[in-house]
Structures are given as C-alpha cells and as structure tokens.
Amino acid sequence: MEGLSPSPEVVVLGCAGVDTNVFLPGREVDWSVEANFTENLDTAGQAGVYASRGYAALGRRVAFIGNLGDDACGAMVREAFTRDGVDVRGLFIDPAGTARSVNVMYPDGRRKNFYDARAASGLRPDPARCREVMAGARLVHSHLADWARHLLPVARELGLVVACDLQDVVDPGDAYRQDFIREADILFFSAANHADPAPLIRRFLRDRPERIVVSGMGAQGCALGTRKGIRFFPPEPSDLPVVDTNGAGDSLAVGFLTSHVLEGRSLAESVRRGQLAARHCCSLRGTSEGLIRAEALAALLRQPAPGPELG
Image 1 (tube, rainbow, N blue to C red):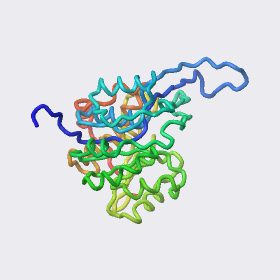
Image 2: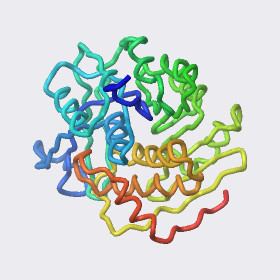
Image 3: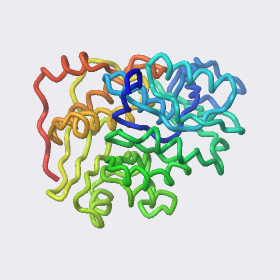
Image 4: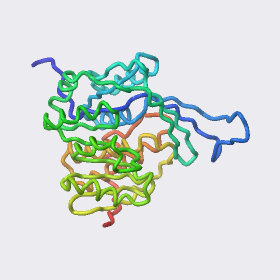
C-alpha cells in the first residue's frame, strides 16, 4: 500500500544495552592500590547494537527485535537506533532494566568482558509482532538471547536465511547453544578460546555439511568452512590502529552476510568484506558510532587482497 515503509532486508535478534569501556592507563590493573585512574566511556553496545548499526551503516534496511529497560540506558540505545534508521517495532520492555556490560580495555585493544545477565531472564517477545517484523525480510541474524531461540523456527517458516553467532565458544556441546546451532544455515564463532578452530568447524559441518561456518581469529585472520573444506584467510592489512575490539566479531558477520546473502557475492569476497569491516571497527575507541559505510568499504576493496590458505 502507498505510504507503507518497505520491509527490512535483515532482522537482528538479540542483546542490546550499554557498554562501559574502562581503558587502563597501563598494561594491567594495579592491584596493589585501591584506586586506579582510568578513562571510562559509555556507548550503546552489545552484539545486537553493533550488528544493527553495522547493517545500517552499509545502507541496508534493518530491523531489531530485542529487549530494553524503560530507563536512561534504554533511551541511549533507542536514540542510537533512531539516528541510524533502525526499525524498532520489535523492541519490548524488560522490567529488570537495560542490559549492561563493563569491558576492561587493554592498550592493545584486548578486553575482559563483565556482562550483567539479569536482563531478559524469562522474557518472551510478542510472537505475532515478531512475525510481522520478519515477514518480507531475507535474513535473520541471531545472537544468544534465550528468547531468540524460539523465533528461529518462525524465521525458517518464513523462508529467511538463518545466521547465528555463537560468540566465544568454549564447549561446542554446550546445551545452551544447541538450538542456535541446529537452526543455523550460517554459523559464526570466535576462536578466542581455541588455538585452532578447525576441529570446531568440522563438528559444526558434520550434521549439516551444506552450511557455512565462519570463525573469527582476531589478529590471525579468519577461517571459512564449507563442504569443500576449510580455508584460512590472513588478516587484512591496515594502517588503522587497533584500540578497541568491541564489536569486531559482529562487524565481521555483518560484512560477510551483507556481501554473501544480500548482495550475492562469492564466499572469498564476502570474507574479505567482513574482515575489512571488523578491522575498521577495531579503530573506534569506546563507541559504536562510525562503523564502516558502504563507500569507505568500496574504497578499501580496490586495494590488492591477501590470498587464502588451505587448511
């Protein structure tokens, strides 16, 4: 009908909140004294925010389904979504308040994350509203909020490609993640807890060999698994400083999924686009503002690409 907004291309499911990034002045916390003088920066953050804002920065129509509190932190996230044009029809109120994370940040960009998981406990969004938001989309990009697992069968019923980010997997048999693993056409995970992601990739391909598995390896690059095998991609060269790794994995997923699912590009090109988006994200200190835009990504892609390595 005339006057109606077009459907989103991608719907992000999951966690949104406020990150407090605590930047240490030295290499470690000085435990010998009571007070450490740090720089503490608040930003609209967590996986759902970085992913939603990442798609918006690349010019894609994106909707977010997730929980926020009716509080000042929730207002910060809503304002960020509004600025970026994110469809927020799927937002619902969490009486426990908006989720918070404290990230202790090291000078080289590494972090230690402390996540307050009270928010979203026992919540379920309105299924009719969620179906309405997802109808007409091409892709659902899910994070690990407990309620999100119940929407993945709906996404499959609607014919959407289902991508799930398992984040920092420790045990691939973790019961909490099994619904997300089972439903995903495309799986992402961080290899932060594994020196070699290949055994996990093979395990995730074992039951569904037609799926795609992408593992972010930080400074070591990225691994891609398909029925044809595993390829390792070196990191993209960049002169940008690495100051903050928050959101890097989300940016990798957004760049890859935008390229491969929404634009129909090859797997190798999509890995490169994802890595460039992640590398740009690492240069943003204490903020989810300024994620890479389509024109900036296009400019970077005109530079020669490092080749993949077979694994």
